Image 1 (cartoon, rainbow, N blue to C red):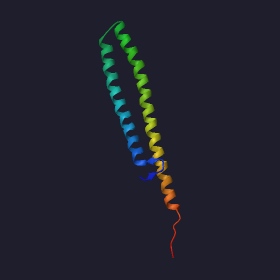
Image 2 (image 1 turned 180 degrees about the vertical axis):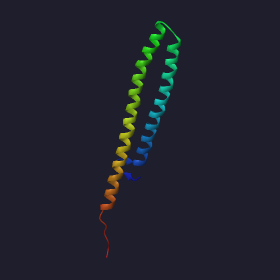
Image 3 (image 1 turned 90 degrees about the horizontal axis):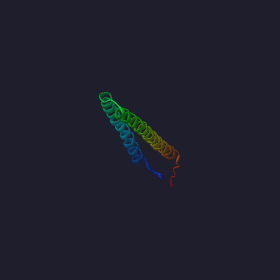
Image 4 (image 1 turned 90 degrees about the vertical axis):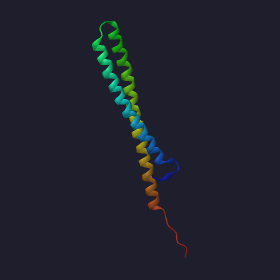
Length: 101
């Protein structure tokens, strides 16, 4: 990828990959935690079980929103890096060449 006035697209792509990887890893961990909480809730009874389930559902919904936002940011950053690369390619291919003669 080329250097551009706004920054280096390699760095943008690297950051995008990190965001997407973190988002995916976090989603996997949330699934594991959700399964564990569900197992605990099924094994317990009473108010504590209901409170645990309700509290976790609220937290899980907020964390899922965070995961989705990270994915959007990562994809948007990669799109910008690709756009900047395309601008560089177009600029390089249409740059005038001069010969001294």
